[in-house]
Image (cartoon, rainbow, N blue to C red; front, side, top):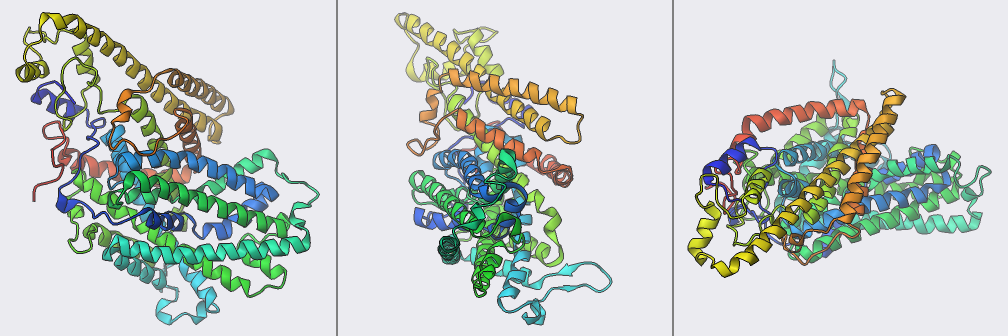
Length: 627
């Protein structure tokens, strides 16, 4: 909303490119929208399949031996609770703002264009590298099922290009091509296939739980009767294990990326996210409880913890069952990696930040066909030519950034929702298809509650309202003055809330850097952590004493899921995700930095000028390019 004239709105939009926000109801033309075909029953396997990857088949052994010991189950529980904090935030925003783009879309509405571009660009990297890494991990497991890589057809076997160190993987490239073709057929068809694959994976994990429990009762759970106790690495070791296995829960955000294609988003999106996360957490904890119970943690094979556990007791054939589960898990994760990216590219093109090439939706399959094909081609080339293991750490950056920004967006939605800044004014407000009024304009309005500008002329907003409803009579003046006074109080509350949110976010960053900055002097880490703790606590206390904004009830599609324990749960989510980001390591951030610099160049050369918020300083009614 805004009450400055068109010229000034355009000027403000140009100067404040990083903070301009689109309206929550902004959508593309019908030809650029996706078909609503998904239900909660189809969202659950998408979430489970994208979350339970082959990591659980390896992660259990590594974390048990090096960090958690027999307390591995508690590490998965703590990580699941931490992931649920982000999941609750996703569930509310997905049900209120059901459109393609997931975290990119939410941050564009709540935070601003600059952060939205950062999130979208980081997620593009995550899904591309993640999908390629998963594809290259399928061929060894597939070869294991048929007796080794020597049994693979020659045209699918890995080989080294003569004269180079490049190892090509044709099997991974073929798998990416097959998944891309499936995604081009339609989201309903791909969801059905993913449900079948996910069901197979879940059956394998249930087999591990039941068969492992039977062995455990026969052996009296020898893994829990170790001399060094339940916490051999101490409480900190268990927490370190939780930080490691947290990444096993990454994937439920794929459900949010399909929001525009869900029939009943307010009901089905929260159900899909919540049930998928609950299933994954339960399976993780049960599997880990069984494995560390039947094999002492010091003797677990870190490469093949599950199959080696059964081989220890003479169940050799279980290796093939576990390998089949790993192949199913990787295939499902591959689909979950390639599904969201075309929708993010389409959402960014719909907003004008990327060329309209990415916006085309196939009339038959109702999927963003150009984006899907390009995503598949890039992922196929990476999977074929590159060993992306060194880039795997970059996959987590996009997700953790998205988790943190989505959590901050919940605080913005509850305390300073962008669409209601003028709802308490004594006069009616303009169309919601306009930009949010800036703080400078609002402050100028409050300084002159009569609604007159510096030159004595009527404010355009009031002039338009008076023409529509007539000039207010003298008898209504006192009531209007009371309302203006209430607006001043509301403005003060919003300013305090914004400061509290900013203080908490900056504080979380300082605490994370202070706690994780191994390259910094110890005194500097202590100072940063202390300042951050004060800033984070101050912001949290401020928000806890402030009343939430009434506009939260009408923001987007009201009546859906509401994130509980606000502001504490979103603040905890921000702290957790920022801490994990700080622990990714300097080498990872250097690689990500190169990608972000490239993204900044693309944005300033194209996106900033073609953004649909840059022309007249307002969101176009149809919010899509004319074609």
